[in-house]
Each structure stands twice: as C-alpha cells, then as structure tokens.
Length: 263
Image (tube, rainbow, N blue to C red; front, side, top):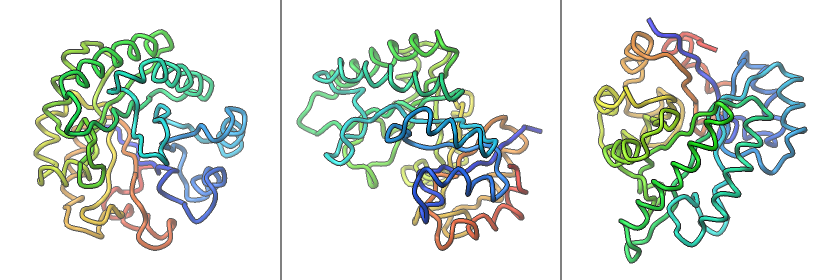
C-alpha cells in the first residue's frame, strides 16, 4: 500500500479568487499540501507568509517559462535562449530553496516544424544536465512532463518514450518524470496502462478528466480504477491540475468516494 497525498494546484483551482488568496482556500478545504505552476509574480516573502499562515507545504513549482503571453512555454529547447534559461534556473532554485519546495518542473518549450528537432533535443538534454546538477546541490528534483499537442501545439516534449530517452541521456538521479494522466489520456488513451509501463521513472503525478480537463467524474476516464492502482503501487503526491467544473470547493466531492480524502 502506497502513501498518496492528493493536493490542489493553485494555478488551476480556486480561480474564483486572486492567486495569493488561494492558499487560504486550500486550508479551508482541509488540505495541508499544495502545488502551483508559477510563483514569480509574487515575492518569496509573500508566498512564504501565506504558506506559514495557513500551515501549508508547497510541493511543486515550475521554472519560469519565458514570456507566456507571447506564446513561450519554456526555454529549455531554444539554442538562442541558453543564457535566459540559466537565469530562469537560478530564479526557480532560489524560490524552491527558500520555500522548501522539493520539486521543480522544467517546461521544454515550443519548437516549430521548420526548426531543427535534433538540435532542440540536444540543447534540452544539455540544459537538463545543467539544471539537474544545479538542483542537486540544493537537494532538489527536476521534473519533465510530456504535454499533448492538442492543448499546446508545437510543444517539444509530447511523447513519453521521447521523455524516457531524454531522461536516459541526461542520466542524473534527480531528473525524473512528471506523469499527467490527463495528457497521457489525450495522447494515447488508456493512461493507466501507459503509467504502468513508465512508473519506475515517475516522481510526481497530476490528474484531470478527459475531455474537459475538469475534476474526475466529469469525463471519460475511470479514476476509481486509477486510484485503486495508485493506492497500492505509488508513494507520492497527486496534483489536482484540473479546471473545476463549477465551484472549486464543490469540485472536491469526488474525493470522498474515489480518492477517499487523502489530504
């Protein structure tokens, strides 16, 4: 039997209120752990204050991903942005260290069909080696996550075997896989079978239902089967990176029957 912690992603849940107020909402709903995508619009002191005030632990953040409004989704594959990428690594590590966050997700970035895929891959591998070594000095884990290209066209890391090969090339014990059941279902279908094949690489899980990316029970996926398997075979966190259908607090009702409240 594994030890599973189910926790909200504050970038997608509790969006009824501004980001900085979502920590309080998480505690009000009984959670002790949270994750989020990006913290960098706020100072370390502001985030730390919310975590301490509401007795929360932040388990995952992303590295800065470039200019999101301009369409950037990570800098790690861009040969022209290596200096910028390294600055983002230092900023991400600074936040993670100060806020006691053990894991950082490194988004790969967008690569157009006209760009050299092999060059992008090698730049990505080199950047992940750099990031992994910098993170290891602080006891941090770096994660990479395949993302479906329906939701994020042109995203470089879009295949789990591709992710496996990149992890093998990087070959660092603290660079691991982030497995999002939503993305895997969108890419392959039968995400649980895919998970079973690659579970040995996984350090963090995220979930949402397909097709709407809402809470479990709103779509096609059998999350009862998924949780039954994970409770017996997985030790770690499961981030609720879904967009609630309806009110955020009400969206947790599925947990009483499926996830059995693992907060």
